[in-house]
Length: 607
Image (cartoon, rainbow, N blue to C red; front, top):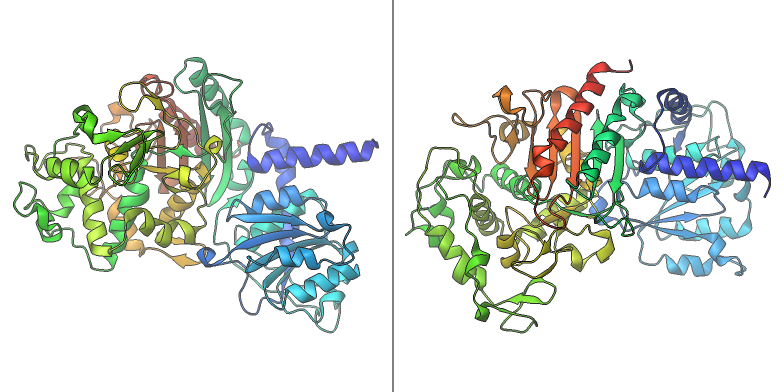
């Protein structure tokens, strides 16, 4: 193999690792040099034919996107960045080399309404490519990513589809352009000279940054050397068997500057290594990532009022102790509900079956099906009839979010899992987030939680760990949500942006401020959200967290914390309950210590 080719492969491999944040060492000086290159490419990239404001892409829930390489050498990097923002299927003309034309490729794109075509300037005059682009642009929304000589634009005088042109045909450019397409990077460069009758000097469209950018820490004023202690804490975690693996993501000022996976799915290192794209059981992050946003939307629509009593929304509760409790108390965990009901302890043999049937339709785990209407007939009556003992005091209770799910579904007329997909996850470009992941993903992409030896008698992989949520069919207001770290970061970046993301306003800024701010006279809580604890001896969620910090933790070993004072979104996902429940992650303060490494690095800046 020629030396320059070996070097090229190494560059692609390292750059791909950098932008998927796996194993490449982050060294401050190298990153500063890398950032200078990336910034130069960004500032010299030109967007043309965007009079219809196609770029940055919006309405992601309405788009089915394909990426096509027409002889582009860096498709792997290009497509990996596209897939940070939306599900994008990859195609290459190299797969159709035996064909005289690209009609078969065009046929294979029939289910896509948006096609992003990457090609170097040397491929523009290829008749196969020219015919393919001209034909496809008649029926699809096409976006051209052109790399290389500016004179190649002449070939597109008749094309009205957006073109993003950079004079660089490099792996670095392959990482910049996808982010410009989705709004992770803003564009403002104009053509410096006339290229053709259509593309004249001064041509070019300006865009604004609307989504997360994927970059190096130095881009957010952070010295990457100051984040290396995260690696040490992660190694300590695995050595102590506090968790077999984890994913850590850090976004500052709308820029993902750290996203790294550690360890394996289990303590068997021959098993699957954790990946940044892995899907975790978020446990109680469900409360703030599914149920609370739904409540916020219904509140904004004036369908739900915080000071209205539960019985006004749930007819069945009107003759129960729950009737007079108001929604605000429920959201603050001050309703007086008992903390937890161990429903699985009262399961009878007649309540479940190892096979599914009309009588046992609700899947709780592999080979475990609970009888029809078990939630309605058994669980819900126990909850709404449970005594109200501590009303007005702060007592954290899962029952609160069972209640809010029921209220939300009655007011919206839509099941919670469908509501959050349609209103939040799909429009935001969140690809993995949702309930019941085994219905949508390969098993091995989902990190296994507990080896359940006492209830379901099986390894829980893609089935919610929480027993009550499982018996309710896997969809509940307090648990049941699964997602990757990137998806978690997206929705909390939207909240940090005061409800705005991808050019869409999901909430009014004042709604975000109200729900995430301290709203209780007797606890640290916001409405649905957990917050920084003013009792500094608790160091919660971490020693250096600011008083503005809000988010939540999850029983399976997860957390999400947003610190507006630092522009920070911090995601930690693990399966600390694998193979069995252990408190080591909590006792070792792993999540908080990592958060403080991040806080210190941000506060020190580039020093």
